[in-house]
Length: 477
Ligand code: B12
Ligand code: SF4
Image 1 (cartoon, rainbow, N blue to C red):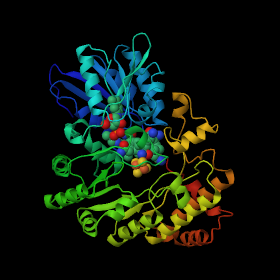
Image 2 (image 1 turned 60 degrees about the horizontal axis):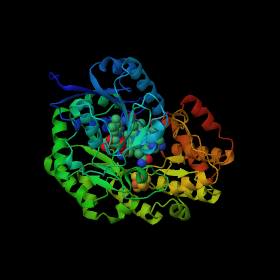
Image 3 (image 1 turned 90 degrees about the vertical axis):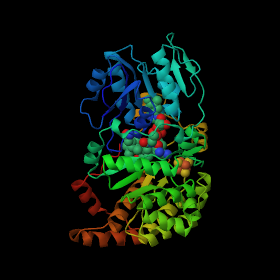
Image 4 (image 1 turned 135 degrees about the vertical axis):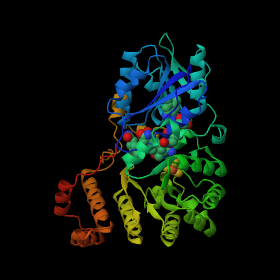
């Protein structure tokens, strides 16, 4: 934790409750960018602290502001609860919201009286600017990258701030968070790390093109491995989970990083995201080097098994590329997560069935491949959603409604019939059982599940009902 240095100005940051224990990288990013000689950064994490409202309130006397990171969905209600408690305790301390939801809905978030400022997209420079202005008693007028409400209740939109190269920011200070507590809660010594921001692509279902305007910035590989070495010396880890949207955007960067890891003598495995078109553009040499440096798992978004749908959602990836990348992964013994999305507006049964068939093929390729299926939920800013809205689909119109817009409860959007939903849920269940590494006691159930999947026979799913009663599904948010 940061040492107490007299006379520094306190900045309190809050990460809402969630069911996973990924390290709070957003708060680490904005907190580390503040000059440690001038500011004392306190990070409170609702996933670690049983009474975050009280803890946050206790830190507020003398604080310059409270910063909260907010994802769309369930985290909004916790962010509101903690921000309201903060306002009750210290109405004079400004509350700043940043992250993916305020990046898309900066103005709407400001309708909630406990939120004073919202930050859009990359936050390091904007937050540092806000904090400096607050410290100097200056207004936020002209502070690019944020919106704010003035004393008269008027909302000001200062417009976007250009994306800044990550190497121009201070390195993330993992001393701001209790790294060992996250290891403990995850049950493994796995470090979360972010090496790039944004994405050059244009997938119609994703918030990234809207928030980062198809721009991408990545850390220099040399300084990154040096940083990993420093963190490793303080908090030894066995695995690094790169949380980048598109880690493999520049293959030369990946190659240099992998070579540096090998040369450093550090021994750890790592996982990251890859697009299938990036996979086919990697040379064999880089693939092998990445594996040698510890690459253990890739997340490769397939999204649809229907080439027409892939075009419609502007994925700009072909199924041939998916299978070529998967082949390479199988050859090198790299595990894979290949997510699909079903239930796009007006998606036909034929298209959903095509996704199911591709998922089956991938599952058959390796026991280390997983093919989760999610239901499409409309992110604003994309063409596919604009079309749906034009045809009468209503997006949530308040923060409260957005907080109940649960992306992951397994509930489909309005474009999936009850019958289709039931089929997809059954397929998801049986394909998992059919291909997972099963214990001796489960083998007969597994054989039955394989038979069902091969024959597309999901009627009378008694095994499913019994197993779901015995082991309820894990919540995702
Ligand atoms: C880790 C992660 C999670 C963790 C969250 C852990 C936590 N901290 O609570 C978990 C596993 C819980 C999670 C869940 C989900 N996630 Co998620 N997740 C991510 C991921 C991979 C990394 C986030 C991260 O740490 N980024 C690194 C930091 C440095 O970047 P950042 O968060 O953008 O922060 C910068 C700015 O946004 C800004 N900023 C952020 N917070 C703040 C706060 C202040 C005060 C300021 C000033 C600035 C600021 O400054 C930061 C530095 O520039 C992102 C993808 C990504 N690379 O960002 C997806 C992402 C955020 N997730 C996404 C989705 C869709 C989901 C799920 C729905 C996935 C699913 N199908 O299950 C769920 C449900 C979310 C929910 N409603 O609960 C979407 C966006 C969702 C949205 N609109 O909010 C993303 C963008 C992935 C994608 N492209 O689809 N997720
Ligand atoms: S889904 Fe992935 S590749 Fe597509 S725009 Fe989003 S982050 Fe980029």
